[in-house]
Amino acid sequence: MTASILRPTAVLAGLLFLAGCATPPAKPVATFAPVAPADVESVPATPLDPALLNPPTEPFTLGPGDRIAIEILGDPATHAEVTVGPDGKIYYYLLPGLDVWGLSLGQARQRLAGELRRYLRLAPSVAVTLRRVQSKQVWILGRVNHPGVYPLAGPTTLLEALSEAGGPSSASAVASLSGALGISAIGSASEAADLSRSFLIRQGRVVPVNFERLLREGDLSQNLYLQPDDFIYLPSSGIPVVYVLGAVLQPRAVNFSGRPTLIQTIASAGGTIKDAYLSQVAIVRGSLAEPAMALVDYHAIARGKAPDVALQPGDIVYVPYTPYRTPLRYANLILDTFARTMGVNEGAHAVTNSGASVGVNVSLGP
Image (tube, rainbow, N blue to C red; front, side, top):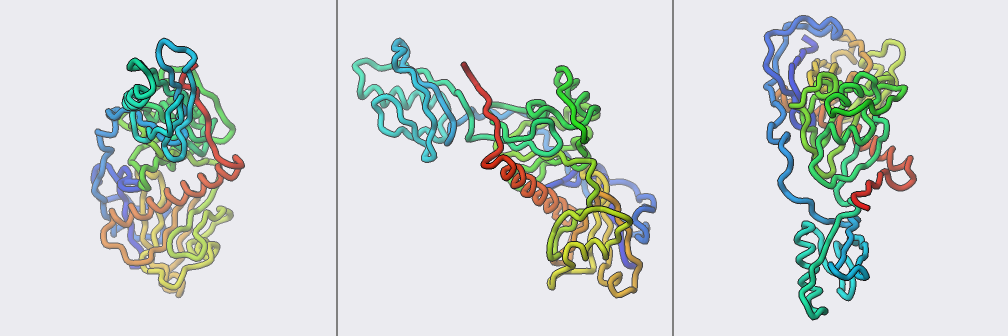
């Protein structure tokens, strides 16, 4: 046997967890010929944590780049706007540098009042207002109408963030998003977003959000609250490529043309490296939320002892460094690697195109 299939009906776990309910034996997968359909396993399900649907309870805390307005009540001449410096300090009135990094607005107000009391005859009443957020942001890139880096000033859901970015580049997805938010349509674009390959990275791992269910079906069980530094990416559905990752000389996206095979595609990525484990090369196909994975003995194919495998646009080819131990961990490793690679490349591309940084400033007050 030169290959086996792992067919999880799963939502992603880890950097895209594989979740959903275990399925009965899968039907033969003709597109994976010459894979033998008898070697079918299911992968345990890992659903989206319901706690992620609850708004955060911690108040907003200040950090470098945030801008606040300060005023001693009753004295308009003391009004000033200051920016939290890289060291977390602000400079206001007669005060030396005052460290506010990690403080809520209420805590910053109390610290300011306490320090000002040393210079004033009466205990002052101080007003502190947030004007601009830069210390807490989320990345929204890919096929949205206004990609960029957006401030996260308060509890924000995934749908609200996508709306702020103009919505996904698909008429149907835009309509679903608009309906879920109770607003009018939010734009369009010529190239549609591929919701089946969209993902959200948090702290280096993918949160198991099913973008198709969220945006096409209006399933609010996928509408989690965002956290600072979340990375949301909606890839294009109009660029036919095959992704080659793992133990190859040049991990990359290979343009899909003609009818490429596994051997040809890995060769386009510079071939395998010395320490590659060639007996369990994986091909991941389909939606990231419900992928199918075939394991192929690449060494046998290269020696002519097994037929080559035809690929399809969007396939992920992963050459491992070591043998896998469990299907779930191996699938998670592949999907984690895919999402991180896409995230790093798209983030670097966005920063390069902007000349310095990608972002938008959102006024939070007059």
